[in-house]
Length: 120
Image (cartoon, rainbow, N blue to C red; front, side, top):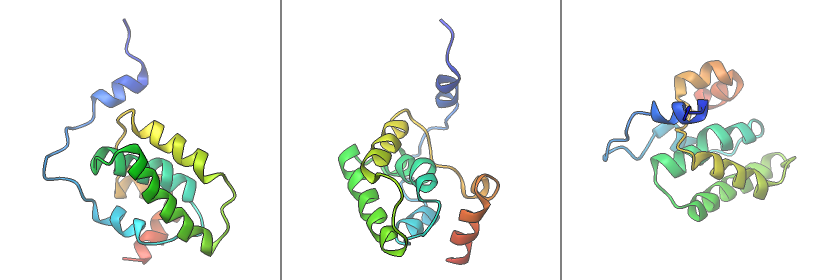
């Protein structure tokens, strides 16, 4: 049986060290409401971080993201259904994906990188 591209990607993930559990720049993002790039942040950063690094159950991860999106919504109204996007993000994270690295963020979403870099 051939492995799918997705399965191969998951198999290449390095194991998480027991002491890892916090990534400072993502923790800072969770404390920082942003006006743009929220769907990207949810999908590539927050859901994978909360589920696969912090080890939170789906319900708790959803609550954390919902709270963050609520603060973001105060800056600039969300143009998407937070409930469905959170559900999609959590479902994707459950496949074992890790959050994007800070360095890779620089190339994949330079605008979000700059926003976070300026908040350091």
